[in-house]
Amino acid sequence: MSIMQDSREATMIGRRTDGTPIRRPLSPHLQVYDMMQMTSALSISGRITGVVWSIGLLILVWWLVAAAAGPSAFATVQWFLSSWIGMLGLFGLSAAAWFHTLNGIRHLAWDAGHGYDIPTTYRSGRAVLIGTGVATLLTWLIAIIAWG
Image (cartoon, rainbow, N blue to C red; front, side):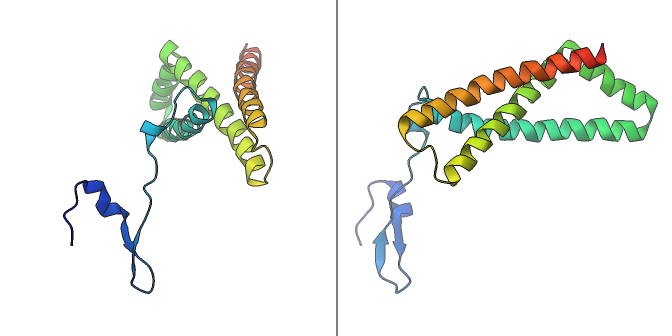
């Protein structure tokens, strides 16, 4: 057996079901992607907004536990969420929610086999970005009017 020059080569070696050796291709990593390309940026942003959603879920759990714990705990959470940093966080969470939702609809269209050509991919990507901005601003405008 030869000595491997690159440790990544070990991950390329596998066996078929009949036992014969096979070399598997390595998946590309972040280094090969152009981060300023819309398709790469939106793909990575979709993953990031999924993580942001998880953080938002923790905030929701904190809020619900505080509501169950009593008025003083609930007042503390409400104070934090109504502070400028809490409002900024909620604004970011709503933007992430809209982006993740609209990008998910875009992926559903792809799953149905529509929109794979490059012009349509860029057009739908711009629609996701514009839709995120408009929906986020409308959400906050409606919330401010309703609370006012």
